[in-house]
Length: 264
Image (cartoon, rainbow, N blue to C red; front, side, top):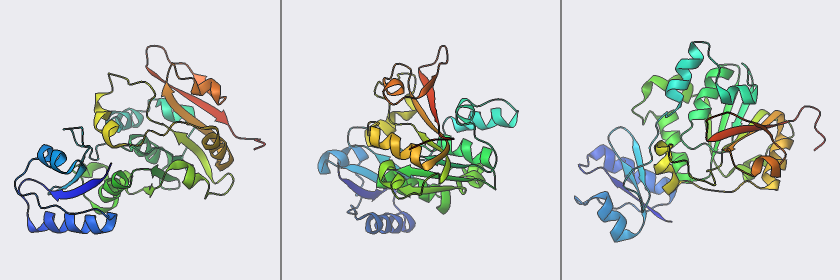
């Protein structure tokens, strides 16, 4: 699906310039808002719509009235739990510690990367791949350009290096054992109805399926572990030989492959 760039309903000189600059950077057409609603623009141009507002970027999929924009989502309460000394299930599955390097293959809202950035600290590194160039742009603008309503997370956001690339292509550029942990959270094969907060992402995000090549590249690049998050009924755990960590009364599970002593 193609994308057009425009401003919020009441454009200013700033938002007009931001939208035009984004269009040039992303190779997307700028369209003057002309008091039209996003829905009207979606129908008229049959495109997704990237909107420059005063403080952030919003991305409307052509079939969605809910925009994707940066929001820390689950990281908000998970970071509070970690600060209280509680266990985070992803961090536990990754065996992530201060100073580690963490590659998030499927950045999405970057909630997991924010949590990882907190754990690895100043000595560690966090890199996130986002296959959608528009989503990657929104996250880069939020994390390193200040275009977000969530300034309270700026110290963590600045630690995350956003890569505009699909995971497999990026993994192929990395040296063996160049990250301590490689993490994959592909869009679930089965929709989890309770996860309404990711609905905007379903309309604009990439839904690449896990493949043997992807897993093998992840094993090659990971020094300690490759970790997968998937629906609890997913066949991926068995198909790709992940040790599934069963969690009662949850719709998603984590699985891991230990890479210490690997032969790949």
